[in-house]
Amino acid sequence: MTFTPTKTLTLADKVRADFPILRQEINGKPLVYLDNAATSQKPLLVLNTLRDYYEQYNANVHRGAHTLSAKATDAYEGARDKVAKFINAASRQEIIYTRNASEAINIVAYSWGMNNLQPGDEIILSVIEHHSNIVPWQFVAQKTGAVLKFVELTPAETFDLEQFKELISDKTKLVSVGHVSNTLGCINPVEEIVEIAHRYGAKVLIDACQSVPHMPVDVQQIGCDWLVASGHKMLAPTGIGFLYGKLEVLESMPPFFGGGEMIAEVYLDHSTYADLPHKFEAGTPAIGEAIALGAAIDYLSTIGMDKIHAYEAELTAYLFQQLEQIPQIRIYGPKPDAKGEGRAALAAFTAAEVHANDLSTLLDQEGVAIRSGHHCTHPLHRYLGLPATARASLSFYNTREEIDVFIKALKETLDFFAGFLG
Image (tube, rainbow, N blue to C red):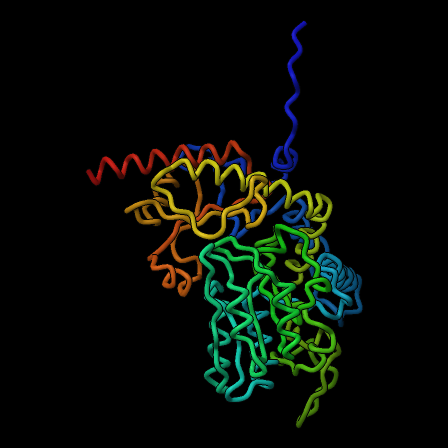
């Protein structure tokens, strides 16, 4: 009898059946989805949770006395508890539901920034930031007279911590930086950034859109004053995200949106406001989406963020090994170590004279979905002197075999352009 060794199942092997969208074909080829930094796919648990809400207990939350409203409220507020536990917030009151991370940053910008910044005060950002962590602070600076300062890159194309130490001063009132760059993939030293900023009395906001779905994130360990994330990047539906804020900081901030839900009492000449977290949640919320966010967190937690991070690191090491064998490719950001650690599971790259959009279009013909363009980081691309980059970004449901398909299609695409351009 011949013994055939059993293949060791990877994490992706165990979970792919949970993601029905991955079973389809694009242009007659199996879909290879490598655009996870833009948005993640959704497991059946999340899809069914959203459907169950609308089919079984669709009702408005909080003030209804009937059964459906009570059930919806319990599920909606239960999801808030899950978010708080997932990022280790000290209190459920520190979790504010928002439409996305952009809205969360705008709440801080308008509620805290407009009321606390004066002419000459300084806000430190970096050239790496997503537009959502630049534009709101431009608005605030224009209206308050605050000054924006930007941390640049090290030669390894990472956040320049030494320059940050030189930029920060007693004039600095806010530092707002990403945890992980969606273009360079660098993991910023957020704990050290927070410690330094607090030494000068500055508040710190962390954009965690690219970290929360891929690694354990502990807000108490980081020590930040605010942290934001978008649900759609962490297996949840679009239209839901959250703002974490330290309780004492949120209590000091006035409401930004006015309307129902965020009030205690309304009179003709004034109003009083609800306690946290509802003070910042005006109007009927995205109830089903919030409940589905809780389901997404259940799914991630059941797997374990440590396991997700470890598997994605293995994929990262393999992706870089394969890309580095293509001479025309230039990858941006720091290199991973042999185990794939030290950066996020994505690679933004250029390929000789071929425009990123052309690469993406032809790869799509082979069923491979990557992102091309500026990835909402215009200032970074301008800093690097690039019109655009292509980006392949991974998640725990991706496989080595998919990376092989991508690499083969990429090589064939580059060969086509080499022949075409002569």
